[in-house]
Image 1 (tube, rainbow, N blue to C red):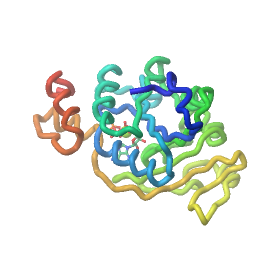
Image 2 (cartoon, rainbow, N blue to C red; image 1 turned 180 degrees about the vertical axis):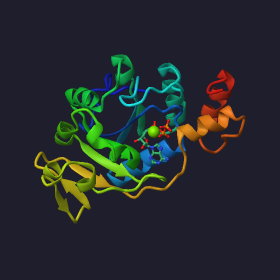
Image 3 (tube, rainbow, N blue to C red; image 1 turned 90 degrees about the horizontal axis):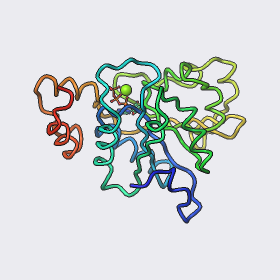
Amino acid sequence: MSSPVNDNDDGKGVRKVAVLGGTFNPIHYGHLRVAEEVREALDLDRVIFIPAYQPPHKEDGELIEPASRLEMIRMAISDNPAFEVSDVEIRRGGRSYTIDTVKELKGLGLEPTIITGCDQFNAISTWRSYEELFMLADFAVVPRPGSPVRGIAEVMPVELAEKFWYDKKNNTYLNPSGHRVTYLRTVFLEISSTDIRRRIRGGMSVKYLLPHEVERYIIGKGLYR
Ligand code: ATP
Ligand code: MG
């Protein structure tokens, strides 16, 4: 599996990529299906999964070591040639901020579209340097059970929201930098890592919530018990 850090030239000059960041503790079919649908809807060649070393907001006592989360992503995406994993945030260490990752990817000549579930996007104004982020990257916002779909005017200060204009033809919000926020209608899968960890702790089945190899890995290593 190539990392974008080592894969600076894909030979086709294609530079637009989707990026799905998260803790992936563990990766599940919610992540995988959303990544596939965004890739298809926005006609992107690649999706890069980027596990956070440490999320910025939460002190997560249940967060297992990065190497295991990375390994599970590798297993989960191995059958999809359009999917890649990058360890940039793990190698950087410390709290993982999307702004740092975006700058790193752009430095490699990539143009990232950041995929975010509504639970995350609704809290975008708490992200580090979020205003700058809108000037550096595109966003693809996807619905998520349990979180309302909030428009840009509801999630950022009016002064910032006013800078976006609606492109009806493409159903997307553009800002002066040329970057956009696109709301997509992806499948509604009520799957979360929190629920998977809870089921494992309770000795319940997690079959069909995540790929079989990932389930086997978790059970084999006795993770999340
Ligand atoms: P946890 O319950 O530990 O927070 P999670 O299931 O939310 O885990 P994350 O790694 O936190 O998974 O999520 C990474 C990204 O994937 C976020 O943008 C999140 O909104 C999105 N995402 C995760 N699960 C889904 C889902 N079922 N549908 C849509 N988006 C999802
Ligand atoms: Mg989450």
